[in-house]
Length: 415
Ligand SMILES: [Zn+2]
Image (cartoon, rainbow, N blue to C red; front, side, top):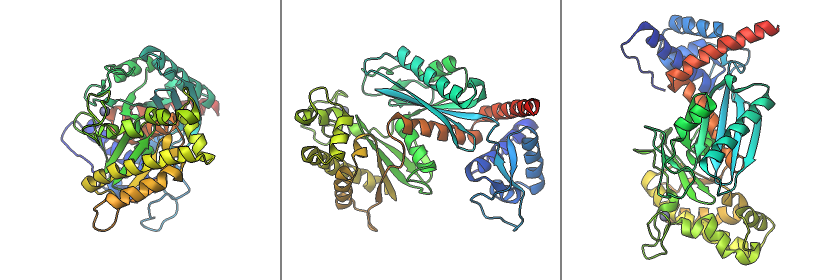
């Protein structure tokens, strides 16, 4: 990671050094002080001063076990880890038909989860209420309240402008369209909120805990009601100029095709999205059938469903090949509800992608997602976003220092 050292007050300089140290510990802890000093390019004396303060504030703890980093000078002990009790991370993800919430400790371990079902017609106000109540339920189960949260990573399907937190996008009939979700959820929850498109959150989760660990150039594709991709370029999540990157479902694959709700013609989603599949398979799943019914029919070997999902694999693989030709990722991870039907979709997708990719040294590896299903995957990414924020947001760091001190006071009082 890069450590930015600019002029400014001593306090802000020390905060930025502390943030750099915490970032390394959050990413690779438990880790030895000497290795931290090497990674952040500070003297060992400076790192010792910073880590002593972080230990005193209850943010770091001494750990007996060594983490992923090598033990630079061969000494046992002296490894530091984030205190799992200093603060908690919250993750919430909303889709059209549900909301999932999770609470994890700062070491990344899951403490609790909760979900609520949503009807597609539910308006934004009801959605926001149910999101808050799911989060509160998860917090109660974990034995705490919102005051323990460092921040909440919050995911939505829309495109989100990072400059102001307004959800925009081509589909004006979505319940979150035009909403300032960042402002509204921050006010409602009373804790710092980090807002992100939920397919990008899933991409973060896949990199931290799933199939894309240690991969630097990754394309994550979510195939469900809609289609979207999360793009990781040289280790960085790519958001685009106004947060609009990744709208894979609205790539036009037939300029003479049917009209799409976005105003374009022949969009990929009209062939591979959930509504298209439900329409094509209405004889199998009935008029009111859901995507989940298609997935379970595929898993039990229904041939008509298998053939339709194979078609989806072929067309999505071909379009993904174009994206691979532009970006040359080493890994493509396939997730989302439709993709959870398994090899019946994944195999044709892989074959089609390989056939249409030009990469001189072979096509990328294509693997299935290792995340939980549905909104839960995005909520897990919300946790990853908060853990990343420990080192990137000065406000998060200050809050962590306060929460760490409170948690120490609580532990002392309880002892
Ligand atoms: Zn479209």
